[in-house]
Amino acid sequence: MNRIYFDHAATTQVDQAVADLMFEYMTDKFGNPSSIHGFGREAFSAVDKARQQVADLIGATPEEIYFTSGGTEGDNLAIKGIAYANKNKGKHIITTSIEHHAVLHTCQQLEQEGFEVTYLPVNDEAVVDIEVLRQAITPGTILISIMYANNEVGSIQPIEDIVRLGHEYGIDVHTDAVQVAGNYPINVTDCPVDALTLSGHKFYGPKGIGAIYVRKGTRILAIQQGGGQEKNLRAGTENVPGIVGLGLAAEVAQREMVDRVEQISNLRDQLIRGIMKSIPDTKINGHASNRLPGNVNFSFIGVEGESLLLNLDMKGIAASSGSACSSGSLSPSHVLLAMGLPHEVAHGSLRITLGRHNTEQEVNYLLEVLPPIIERLRSMSAWDGQSYSKKQEDYCSNCQLK
Amino acid sequence: MYTEKVMDHFMNPRNVGEIVQADGIGEVGNAKCGDIMRIYLKVDNDIITDIKFKTFGCGAAIATSSMVTDLAKGKSVKEAEQITNKMVAEALGGLPPIKMHCSNLAADALREAINDYQSKKESEQDE
Image (cartoon, rainbow over all chains, first blue to last red; front, side, top):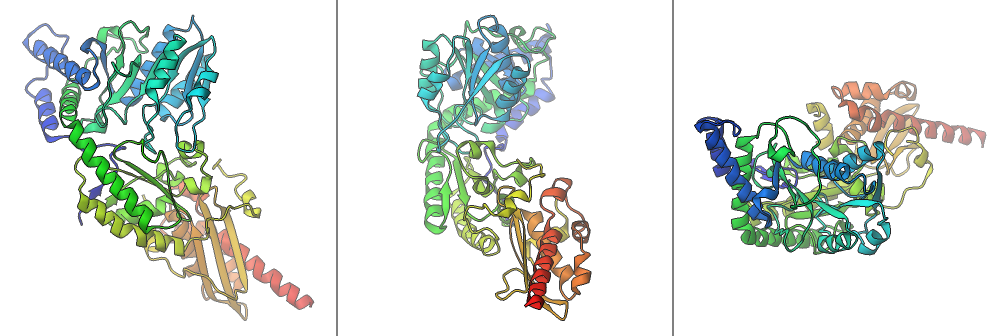
């Protein structure tokens, strides 16, 4: 059976040229960039080149790029680093209720440490309201951290407006751009955020490597101590194979950006139209048009997400869902709930994230197999889509699902 | 993460559907948790002659519903009452730990259906 990969927001396949280059830096060119000898210098200049490639992808200078182990570390470093560096100015941070856990849990940790955090609500399309943000600002606000685009429903946030507002009040703005960098154009000159997180494996680079951009002059402290790598901001011997891989992936992404965005968003729109046409009682999640090129997210009333994913998997199709069961956690997606979806509808969500290797044939195949799967699951479903307020509400009162 | 037996009962569930004039109907779960199970019984001379289910839920929820109907069919009401969630999970070759609580409710649904049958029977006798 042919396998079809529709889960590019989870991770992507490493580009062959990227993998080949990484192999070279694990075998022949294995030096430590801190070493003075030829092996070290070889690795050092490779890291240098990669820093330039990553900087070019987002319109930054290489001095503003710091390599990390990926998106989670990048978010931790940017948020904690800026918070610690500015805590004498104030202890208030603003973020949103739809951030990735790398941001949410970092903010919760900072709350434990005495910072105050505001989690902004979003509208039903998962977009932050700039006026609500303005009202949340206090004299003690030191950082605004809002994702560039949401990983589950793809909605793109008004980051330029957010930055303008933050800077009006002298507040640093960080954005988690993990889903965006390498997949959609970003330029930190046009959209002058103070810090930005990106991750390699979301755009055909390797896992375990990422970077943060920190605007020159932004106050930030290291959160781990060791050797003086990355200008003392991120101690630890550089992951040279990962860094060269990230660099090349960034270069390829930048070169192919326009074509990829066009090709992938065409497939996305075709898929959205196809599903809306062929499956009744379906709700699209996220912004109708201002969404990531590869993101499609639907809720099918009466259907539970994990059942749907298993059925698709049997047909060779890999996708994901905001259902509790498919995430390995006990509650459905916090993003879908924050958008105001009832729990039962959140349980029935399907996320398809398209990538550069997907074809029209694959989209057509999904459009062919999905409607009968939904129909079959609905025919055996005990929930008809009516809201559920009978005595069963209490059945799970002692259940861990909240 | 699921056993072959779970996948079999999930992809080819036994006894799916409704019984129009059921002698007992039982329902547990709630849509908030992502699981609702409904079981329909037909009882003749205290024997479960027909049993059907409808379930909204994950793979484990559907597979346990299917399995409990298989286990209960043809049994006496008294025997069927003895079926536990644990027995259902064991008959399926086990469930992932996270599913043991939230999606393993099929025997509860069966017991609800039996209770419904018994209370209907009692009220008929009262008349």
